[in-house]
Image (cartoon, rainbow, N blue to C red):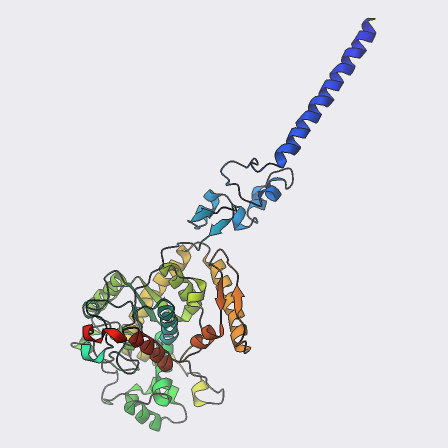
Length: 450
């Protein structure tokens, strides 16, 4: 009897174990179909978590976590990646915004430095202004506000309602914060762009010899017809208004023009540009007054930084190159400069200001990139989207639109034939489009205009 009882007890115990296990399994199955799923500590439950939770024994190892799409990452991890804003909508989908997201900034003072890809930046700013009916500071005629000094003649500027400040500056002007402060709010973001000085000077040489001829430069061309590039580098005095000077006067388009555009004082210029103390003060002032100085040699990087700084979208910064000379490979302008240590040293000496400017802001620019979270990823995405848009626009899709899906870097957007046209519009025509639109907007307010 004892043995039989023991066997019955064991059988009963086995039944209870099986029954309990069945109940436990049933509860797990039921709970797995409920909305309120268990989530790892620190994670925010979103749609799509079912797949994540049930994957490989309901746990993600750290090595796997690094591969999980951003919408499945924890808020803490998103924050560590620099994606600061996290919004859960009614369908429990995460909307991710670009790192360092800020509210869209619409007041921008852009100093259009000569021959530093500034016309392409101008096109971006003018398109932005058109899309939002912003007020652009424009001359009555032409694209230039001033070029040989910082004074602005109000009578030569476009009519504008009294007491209303402008939103965008992107035409050629010699920078002076005090003067421009009469037309723009103090809160306007100040931006400039510069370029490696020799490349900038050679670009200016070609432009002012062929597209917009300057008398002194044409005189130098006469002396160095076969190779104007080497002619300029070896005999720069032949291309200046005063051939008795080895280095150019202030305001020259071929020497220290970037520093001139950015407001370096021209009083006693020859001595001042050799004064290290004055140069240091100039650079520190620019660094204080400008939120960012872009580098055209890193143009795509510059646009992504600008997007993040201004809180703009990817669409706002997509571009086609504007006002860029197409050089035939058999042209005299396709020749590479013949440089030796003496020529390079002489050029750097004459362009001491611009080299000081470039050498000062280039490392600052590169450091800003290094400090940006997931910058390379957004840069890669930007280049891909830009390539898709170029392919669309150049394939004569005049009756179609291109849909760009939303991403963690930007909301979704549409590219139309009109967008393609504006991106490829040259400077003079683009300025005229904006000027006409702006005058039309204020046509009924002429009595209160200045």
